[in-house]
Length: 234
Image (cartoon, rainbow, N blue to C red; front, side, top):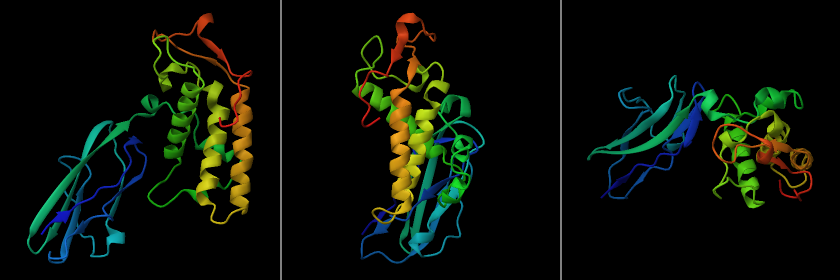
């Protein structure tokens, strides 16, 4: 007999940004008695939040943090035989430390009603901007743009995020419309394809001032011109 608590949530969030903690994939062996309570403590010392019913689809908690740091989430599952707990860690960043390459205001300039597609459990697309950032840094690595010691660049390697803002913005729009597309060839897939093209073009035009040696500054030897590189999957 056993209970298997399962926590699904982001690994990184920003201060004051809504996200969802889900215990929907929690399960137990067939010989256990019915689950009577599902409790989530969003960070140590905050106290458990209870009152969730027996429908696993409702085993969720929407939350946001007011301070940065590493937070420990605790899930506690109770049935007639006792309780079982599980923890997960989440990193909470300030806006400055998150250093996203674009924001939702950039999206509204192109799609005025884009906020209607923010999914349940969210109030911004910061999580998509973070994914676009990851993809851009991964792309630079794949084409051989690395630090002076040969390791991957980080977001702090980008001296001026204005140089990647257009690239990031169009990547975010591409991801959003790809996510909401439900039928091959529907208008959302077409929009996703359009913005993928814009992202490739923006990446192709980028000339980046980079901090390749970690000194916090860019000089004439730390500029990367991407205009000559092939960016089919930028």
